[in-house]
Image (tube, rainbow, N blue to C red):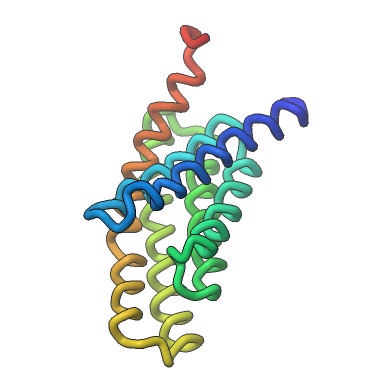
Length: 179
């Protein structure tokens, strides 16, 4: 792929990711808003990784937590690098498995499921057990419990939903019947 195509495709996907994150201003704190926005951001990570390449997925993975921090969605700057790492792990695991010798539907499914689980492990253990407990011990208990809840099971759910939707989009993009 040429540099121009890479930059253009990555920029378009990143713009979509930021647009999805800006849905926070439209839907606010309505029930399940994190589920919707998180799934859409994970979708962009998977589409970037699967249709453009690993570097594209990593770029989206690194930029979206910065946007979330500036939007006030990540309440402490120490959580941005944790989220970046979790997103990158999701992209890398997905990429490694789709490039493996496994058959296509199997490799995609394994990439999404194992990527989602490993992302959750990184976010939960690094975000909650290390960063919250060791580096931000003075955070009010109520705020810490909200962060702990957000870095827990919802991360697996949003990664799975975004991964499945992303895989469908990749299949459409790669289809010979698309314009």
